Image (cartoon, rainbow, N blue to C red; front, side):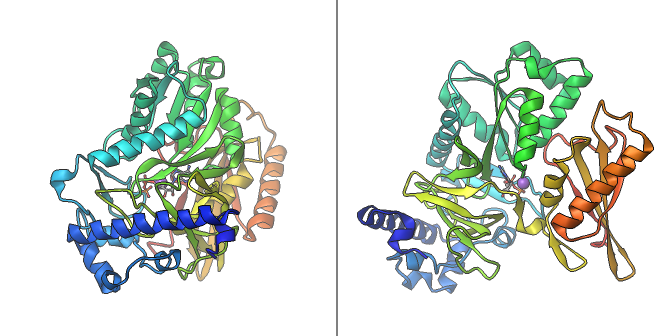
Length: 432
Ligand code: ADP
Ligand code: K
């Protein structure tokens, strides 16, 4: 896969690029070995100590690091420096399993700031902006991570954190924020709640939003842009690699994310862990070779995407991330992702974007129910109209997913709202 022509047209640049990655990753491996951690022994087990990294081919055959390594080495086992060098700890939000503890040296924090700053400046953040940060503060990387970049830009930061929507709306209105940082779920919640409070947020000075921490389809982006009267930018990251700012939406193409290839080495692999050619879907694998406290070799992110283009050290373009491998549901033998349901749902203006998928086992057979609700302000539907919506939705889902799904339609505001990341699946088979 990694012949020079794939990486870039210009051969000498490619050689430089290969040299850059080889040097950086060899260096990271040395630091990991000196760290003397359990992670080191894992690499030793793989014979990595005798295995000098000299080419991309060598890099591509290094062992993977997985979420399981975090579990087994909880809390500090993967760190490559003594804790005396670590100035900050965070943990993943623990969407699945036990939290993963991550650490940063002073340099790591500096680099994080640089990358977040890049993401924000690329989309026109300036020192004249007032930035309302609704990402959670605390162990979650969202709040404090984005704060680094905002302050570096010279913009005015409002560290609102998550929760207490009512108070957040007051702050937004009174302080006249021009930029919103939040999960897409919270952005939707905010638009709903401000409507209830008779605050027309779409006419407020808000002009720009950076949203991430969970998948959101392009049609949801359009809804958020319309409801809040902003341009909504997709920002990507994960705690294990750094936090928010690993990549950001391409300003000219809302379907792709630019990952910062001067800090991260990016690969896509299939379920067996084999590299797939550029353009093919698979799991995103990232090596964070410049990190000092926690350099990870070939970390399997679980996020599914494909490489769209590479431009040397300026970036690797990947497709907007719609799902993660551990979200995949197998229903009646068919693989499906909640994000597919979401994409179908966003094409129904009569319905709100909130939903809950319930999966039950009836005898030996799986039974899927999709709970949705009508959009606000449109609920004077006749019974027959609701029936019609439900039939059309059932058909679209069957066509797109190949699975029969029963639909339950509720009145607006009935389904549970979320102030951070959404919970969209209740798989009752797990406890069966
Ligand atoms: P957890 O895995 O516990 O949720 P994090 O809070 O670090 O831990 O979340 C990182 C994950 O969030 C990513 O691996 C990815 O699945 C998801 N994510 C973050 N940003 C985006 C985005 N812009 N689009 C889609 N998914 C995202
Ligand atoms: K997540």
